[in-house]
Length: 141
Length: 125
Image (cartoon, rainbow over all chains, first blue to last red; front, side, top):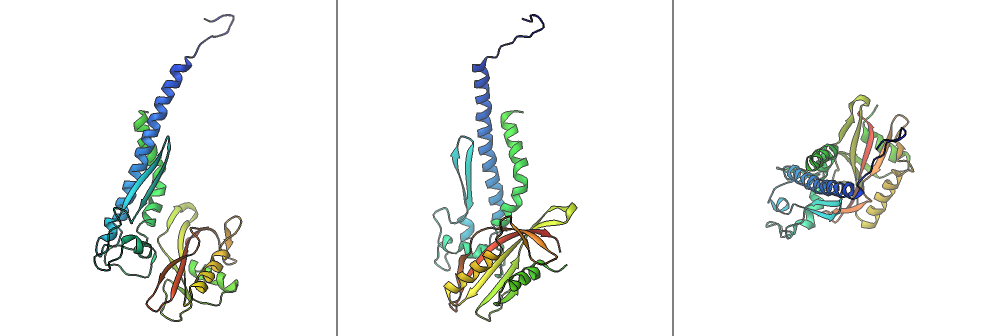
């Protein structure tokens, strides 16, 4: 009640805190979704650029998300899915993926070198906006 | 203004490099050689004609140790406290080294290749 020019009000901290926790939980869910969406988009771009002489490298592409509580780490890469063996050379994908990725002097009938680095760099400029949209949708703001 | 790779070659030469250096290619001879490759970069601000321009530095040598040492020598030439490197009197860059030199491969002749990547933030030529 206003008294002598003062305004009095009370805050229900428990309710405020529980509402804040709901929002934070939704931010966490949104962050994880945004991270997953980023990985999927990067991998999709990467798979359109990876050399595909035998498809071994493409078949080894993967992404993983680790962590929790608003702190996620994503790994996008090759050499996953059991690290398949190239049917022509008998080598595992992980044993030659770096050379294929880094050698800029090799001609590939399909795909190209830097098939992961380029998509990651291209996505960096988009990430903040995409993540903000996903988190905003999740929070409902 | 000259090409970025030319400026990088000049920088290495002015800092004592005498190994044969190729730009955007690497011929089979001599055995001891350096190659500079520029690959896909990105313009970040068209207003100032600046761009992030990635360059790969590859060193070849018959000896793995020599290849590694040479790659490290070039790598160190691109290190500075604030990242700013004057490649020539006309061109300054911000050099961001992406990883220390690593062994890329061994070719059919037993020659060893070491390489590293560096992103230059600099002018568009």
